[in-house]
Length: 112
Length: 113
Image (cartoon, rainbow over all chains, first blue to last red; front, side):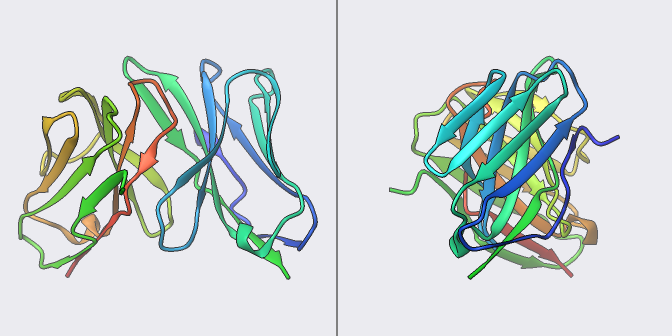
């Protein structure tokens, strides 16, 4: 089992719709959770971080965390073609030195 | 105003050569990282330094040797390059160890022929 799992996609949604991206992680002691966006040929860019159970909203983005289910999600409201990118879920844990584990990413395509 | 910079952006070289990639951050962060992103886009940590001290060294061949002359710089030297080393290498930094909010450099695309 991979430490951080994401559906590779592509996830295709029409412009204006809600895109829902999901991520599960295997290590219960994971402590903090992040979503990065990576455009093709570019570097990852942090868009959301979440540290406690529940929802966290930032503009059109909402991160959701459920530690009991070991599940993190990212909702993108009013999706725009400019949101088309790969979204990387990342999990931080202390392994005797904090380490960030990235999922393989979900490709999102927003159709105009 | 570049926060995390890397040089070179592209590196094409032959098997067996030795090459270096340089990274600098002007964010005042304490912790810096090297990641490798392979052709399947999987991003994997290689090394992490906190204030010039090595704190994470993943299972990376010892042909790879990081060096941190100060906390703003983290360089990566690779000896005896192999075909499998072809990938994009990203440098990143965070405010402190344990902070997963990382800022990435633009990446160095290494191609070994």
